[in-house]
Amino acid sequence: MEFTDDQVVRYSRHIILPEVGGKGQGKISAAKVFLIGAGGLGCPISYYLTAAGVGKIAIVDDDVVDLSNLQRQILHSTKTIGRPKVESAKAVLNDLNPDVEIVAIKDRLTPENILGFIKDYDIVIDGSDNFPTRYLVNDACVLAGKPLSSGAVLRFEGQVTTIVPGKGHCYRCLFEEMPPAGLVPSCQEGGVLGVLPGIIGTLQAMEVLKLILGKGDVLKNTLLIYDALRTTFRKVKVPKNPDCPVCGTHPTITALCSSYEANYCRA
Amino acid sequence: MDEIIPDKKIDIRGLKCPYTFVRSKLTIESMNTGEVLEILLNYPEAAVSIPKSMQDHGQRVLSVNKINDTEWVIVIRKERD
Image: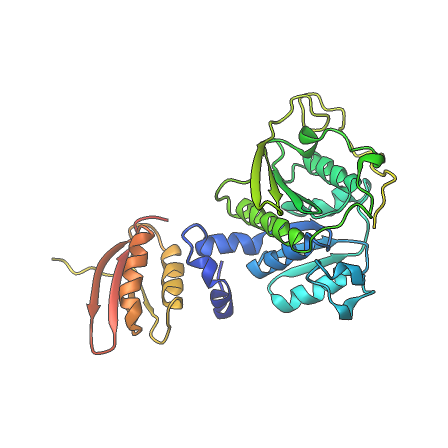
């Protein structure tokens, strides 16, 4: 692609990398990603992908900015409390890099709308905070054949994995069914040290850039577990499960049904 | 020795590092393997750093000549994508 003088300067630290160059930056500029959540994970993910010059980033979130978000959700501010998160995020991202098209979708993902949303995008990124969405996104990506970066944080621990349908494991190979509501930490038991989603989100952003560039090894068949208190990163092998209900040899989930909603606390 | 005729010439006088290399690299990327690029520049550090970086990226430096008090001409052959 042809770069403007400003783009040559803006992306110069990418272009001088042998693994990126003008060709790699061209791939980044042509990429379209679909991000679920403009919260603790979605903020750093979209911030760095916008800085990197990803061509188009859609962000879906139906929430509004709350004072309690600001300890970790770095796109939002005291001034945007009460505004939809996707709008608060879009304003900051547009200021950061006008090259990037930000599509703000104030909506809730459902089994009915998700496939329509992701069909025009190359990569899906899950920055959601609940199990029903996590399983819905996984199943939709497997059915649609879309690569997925999945991240999660709780208290002092974070997890990241990268799902490339047909070429590795999926979320259900790892945890076949959603945990029952009683086993999921309640709001009071939750809590998260604010930097943690920043670390996990930036790892996800890096995975997405590697998927776009086709360079390095992504966390395929692997779950990366970060323990912030001990400062350890552990990689756990996750083999593809041939009996997986969605990506196995004889899948039982072949379409998205409406069984994803469970009675979890969503705060 | 036969004189090498460049397939492409760029004038990056006025540019400083790292943009001297960024411009040179983008030009090399747009060329075919085996083609020759001639770079005219006046940023002294780049007269050293461009040949080194081009070699690190797998290209062949054919010549580096200081043509007057302030300007250099570097000739590179593209060896790989």
